[in-house]
Amino acid sequence: MIRTDESNQTAGVSRPVSLARLLGFLLLPTAALMAGFNGIQQVFVPGQVEAMDPSSKVASLAILTAFAAIGSMIGIPMGGALSDRTRSRFGKRTPWILGLTIISAALMIAMGASNNLVMFGIIYTLLWLAANMYQGALVAILPDRVPEDRRGVASAILGLGPPIGAMIGVNVASHVGPAWGYTFLALGLIVTCVMLVFGAPEASSLTPVKIVETPREKGAGIAGFFEAFREPDFTHAFISRFMLFMAYFTVSGYLFYTLSDYIGIKQIPDGNVPVAVSTLVTITVGVWVVIATFCGWLADKLDRRKLFVGISAVGLAATMVVPVIMPTWNGMVIYSILSGAFIGTYFAVDLAVMSLVLPHKEHEGRDLGILTVATGLPQIMSSVVAGGLITYAGGYPALYLFGAFCALVAGVVVFLIKKVR
Image (cartoon, rainbow, N blue to C red; front, side, top):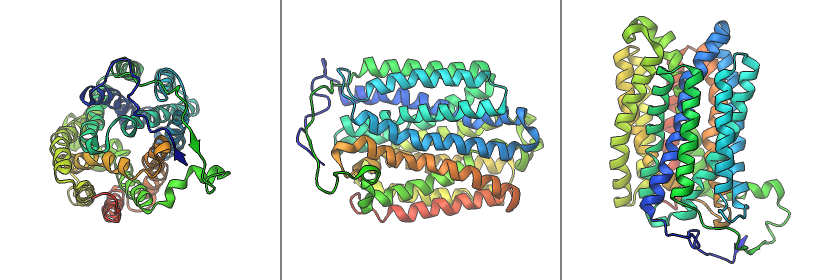
């Protein structure tokens, strides 16, 4: 398609919004969303599943995570694609961001009150669908409103959202019971969303945009939705991101059980698994924030974003061998420090790389959403693969070695991208 109106997205906003202001207000809901994802998935869900089904907790967690990840995989591109086509005086992303925030918050509170495994799984899946539709609309703000030459800086700043959110979410979940913990996470989502909408308002999208369909795109249907995969750089970016997050989710989703069943409660300080998870995540985040801030700036300065992504993926692969050769509490601390360094580097630059391989200006929300599916699809597969590795293929050492292999592949494939240096 050819877009005939290339007006700036921020034109028409009643008062100008500086890049610093936009990124500041965008960082807050990003962190709040990640707080919800991490607090729920790393602490609340494993603990609640164990309480409801202690004898089959690993298999039950794998099944529930798979269904929730399906919701994630559908939700992210759906949120981006629907908001691409939305026309309102409040902009095209804002109506979806507001509505989906309210729905997600309500589902969080319902999850905290659930004590039936089947109902819990249904709410979990619906929450991941709604929250990821919200994420799809939220991340589309980057290509909408940030110039290409500033996306490295933007990526570095927004890359702080996941570690800050993880630290807040896991600490809240570890020290507060599910009922109040879910409520606090829901309130954080609502408050930061309102701050974004009113603090950095979006331009009206009521001005019609003329789109001329090329012969190839007419009647493309479902195939047209995935047309971005015709571009090799887009495909390589998707594969690299998929493999990196396959490594990440395969391991991180079972951190709770790694500590309790592999490292052993006797080796954990005070024998408190939730607090141990919180401690390790806090260590990871502390390193992550320092590294991400520096590496994001340096990658932008050197204009070598692809290089930083590749190095971080290979480094993460080496890091995942640590728990295999050192299955102790000290080994997990070392693992947390190193993974924070390499994951921090990855997140500082990854979003900039993704935004620079988008092939179609008029479908940036949809295509960025599809790239973000590379975080949801691994969740589906990783939960099943992780359960199988733990149960049938050698336990937790096999889990970490599989993660190392996936991270290594991610690092190799990213160097095939030609458009980004």
